[in-house]
Length: 211
Image (cartoon, rainbow, N blue to C red; front, side):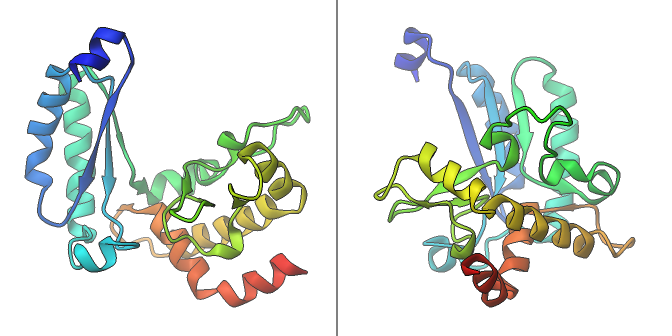
């Protein structure tokens, strides 16, 4: 970190939220500010990949997710402009009011839109496969593999072949599912919800992708 600061390279921290470490968040924020970080990203543990076995049972549950949302709001107010803090949880009411936050609308003027505006984040898995949102995302929605072509080419092919259109359709279906219950707690993991919805529909999605 001293080398990064001396070189003038912006940097940030990712805090992986588990079922048991929410109490550490204020200390992490103070440390990040002291070190000169520009960003603190709070990301919930997802039990996929190695975490499915090594950290089984540590995924933050509903109560922790909503406690984290409140802690995030208080912390962001407390630190002000000292550091940018982001939280990778969605809020059901916000998605009801502004569904575009789950995906992007194409510009009305027809201008080209960047891939990052359509789907973010992208994940490069260990074998080079590029998938939307999170590690372990259903492969039927993968952009392709970096061993076969560079990302720019994979992205263009994915969009031209209807990959984004299929992905967005599934996001819309997920949104209807997760916002239907008005009594559900507001904060939840949107990435995980989309992945779970697609996991249940993977055979159908595979058929559509190959059609």
